Amino acid sequence: MRHVDYGEADRIVSLFTAEDGRQKGFARAARKSRKRFGSSLEPFSQVIVHWRTGRGSLWLLQETELLNSRTGLRTDLPRLALASYAVELVELLVEEAESHPLIFELLCCFLDYLAADGAVEVARLLFELRLVYLLGYIPHLLHCSECLKIFAAEPIRFDAARGGSLCLSCAGPSGFAIDLKTIGSLARTLNVNHRQFTDFKFGETTRHEAGRMLAQVLSLVLPRDPKSLKFLQQF
Amino acid sequence: MLGSLPSFARLTAELGKLPGVGSKTAARLAFHLLRASESDVTALAEALLEMKRKVGFCQRCFHVAEESFCRICRDPARDSRRLCIVQEPQDLLAIERSHAYSGLYHVLHGALSPLDGIGPEDLKLPQLWQRLEQEPLEEVLLATNFSVEGEATALYLAKLFKEKGVRVTRLAHGIPMGSDLEYIDTGTVQQAVAGRREL
Ligand SMILES: [Zn+2]
Ligand SMILES: [Zn+2]
Image 1 (cartoon, each protein chain N blue to C red):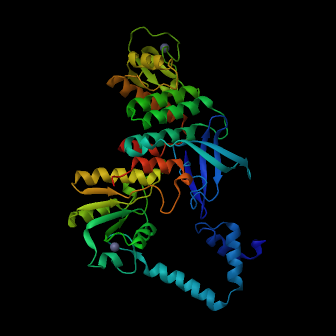
Image 2 (cartoon, chains in turn orange, red):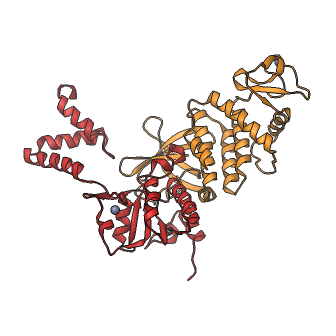
């Protein structure tokens, strides 16, 4: 996911793995010699790592095999910014060493889609929605969060702090008005496998409202604003 | 142990702030200085202070300089229609050692980094745009690193320079001189194939 230089020649690498969640690895001489690790430890790359246990929880990286360097992400600034944002969300929301195979698949498929020139807005919406869902933070959608009434074509509001969608009589002035169609579209999206990113179409209103809603949900659960968010808004 | 030697502890703490120096190395250096002669230690301390007082950054390109302008900016033989953009003064020195480039430079002192929240305003970029108002350019060579941050910076600059009608080039990257293809890592080979050129 990222690396920081350590001393003269070494690197500490943040990894996200299928079985062992987020881990930190120590790559000896990774800065000076390219023989052992080459470019395999660059952000967004998918690699097989061979490691030994070291001091504390740090993995001592022995050898790596590069599977996919996703070079497409390096040729377009908006995609690079979004990929960085997704990685940072995972860093902020997934505990170290907590196994999350589905989130691992989600991140891999998301990066693959972006690297292959995928649509930036769609990718962001799908990633945020599914990440929130897989972490168990999905708000109430098709019924009122408080009186549990199931909505029938009616105006509703959304307030993440109160649990999600709200009927007008429960909501009062809190949250913001949201189209039931947006909510319906997101609920249907959650029925599609989290690895699929192609063949989605969202209208302008849906994208805008869903973006606002997900931003509200994320700001409730994030320990701080992602640093890459400012960057993402700029490009 | 060092609690009873506050001045020794202070020195190891200061040395430990240097890049690449951990607490063990810091203690080793401190012990070395403890045994060194007073004149050697004075010479080191004076050299540190003198460097800090005298060396600053060139007002034009932000390379290190002991005067207002660096050696390269003062050299009339340099080709002022070409500008090479690097991340750090050390990168400038690496290109100078190659003797393959005779234009001017601009040192950014960093690179864009979405993950660390480093944006254009955190680099020497406003100074670059200001500079360009007085210096007409024909070519800009983007020589930022081939890391994600360096590539992001190059993409960002390439777009802005193209809008200004300046020819933009990027350092080539691929197989190091004198190396065997079979030992090169996959990522580098991928880049080298993608960036192949006509012969
Ligand atoms: Zn209600
Ligand atoms: Zn200069």
